[in-house]
Length: 231
Image 1: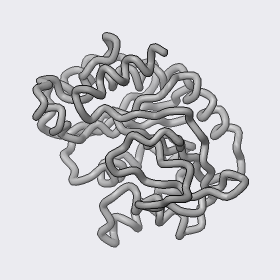
Image 2: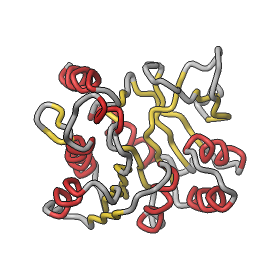
Image 3: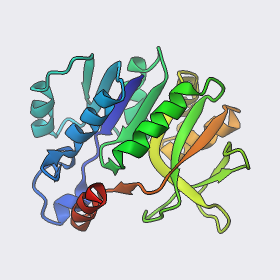
Image 4: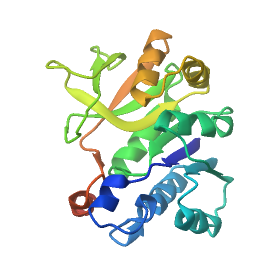
């Protein structure tokens, strides 16, 4: 399976709160967030790993240049206006197999992630498997509407009925890249709108529940993420 990491954001809230390192190099329990993801992907049979970073992140670019992996390792340096545009820049590395895409600050338990990847790899019917969680600690959650079989029927900005929200881990097949390219052409710029378009295009999406997924957006989130990983 191919893996991809979006690490092109500015991490402006961390900077405003006094963090001097760029977000991908912020350490959790002594390990850079980007390195933690790469190591987890390697443990889960990565056939390639691709990363996008912005042009201003010189430290991150230098860090990635010095990494030596046993699988193809693709690094794109480009500033983009959104995560969806970053995904668009990575798409050519993801066309030949199922792939898993996530942002650099998405924190999850390794065993849950391994179960998710195994389920996605073994499912021959779905066009995508999205990580979801009923742990809601997001400033702007995207609610995921599912049926009794955990097939995704919608993505909602607001809901009083949905149990789950998006966890920001996207397992997709190359079929989704057609939707991505069409979405960019029509001027869409948000990942949640891309996900809505997947449903509109009738791709078969399933939801895979995680007990908890957290993002590192603020200084206080660093300690919370470390405690979560250690529990």
